[in-house]
Amino acid sequence: MNPVITLITDYGCRDHYVGAVKGVILGLAPEARIVDITHEIEPHQITPAAFLLRQIWSWFPPGTIHLVVVDPGVGGKRRIIVGRYDGRYLVAPDNGLISFVHRELVCEALHTVRDHRPSTVEPSATFHGRDIMGPVAADLALGAQPREFGPATDEPVLLEIEDRAQAVDHGLHGRVLYVDHFGTMVTNVRQEQLAELGDRPGRCEVRVNDTPIGAIHKTFSDVAMDEPVALLGSSGFLEIAINQGRAIDRFGPAERVHVDVHRQ
Image (cartoon, rainbow, N blue to C red):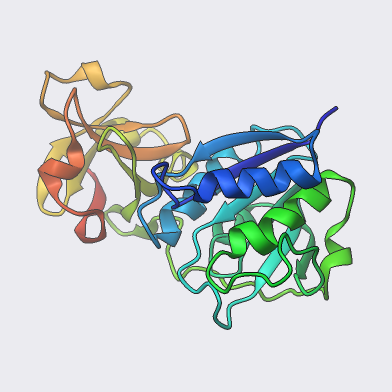
């Protein structure tokens, strides 16, 4: 079976960057199948890329190589890491992109990249996706193992972010982790945390900041058009949406939004 390499970047699709990374990979591992997850991460935004990586991780078959390049520290002191979790591989800058995967899955190998096959005679200081990480992903596709690229590490950089809602006397207190293409806000209130409330989730009241938006529903059309709705999304997190609208436009930037689930 031809190896699969997925790509998550903040490169956008206007410039040559994505194409150059793909060209390097295919030049070294021509049988690889490259799958674009997204190149529309907002520039330098590590948290949404880390969240997306975890959401797609297990949907790909064992042996898949996930290459993630959101790298505001490129050329500086940050490391590049290569790892294996749950039979799948990761290549990324060591800046927190691994956070959700590392916290939720069993780490089978994690190494700092010291030895690699460069795509050019002298790797660029500003394009490690093409010159270092792309070749590492290609070599993994050809059968290399993480230990071949450098020393083991057990101290990756992890984001200082609460990836689970906080349990409080009145229920759960959460925050937004991600805003999707539809403007829906994905919170860190997890399905299993709501389940721990027993039969109470149906009697919960969800608030965004100080604005009550009602109980938890099953789908968008449970409320009228242009009305806010709280529901459990397909990834198992509580989401805040507007039926055929954009919650982020209604409630403001994600970093200022908090979600409270109150027992009635």
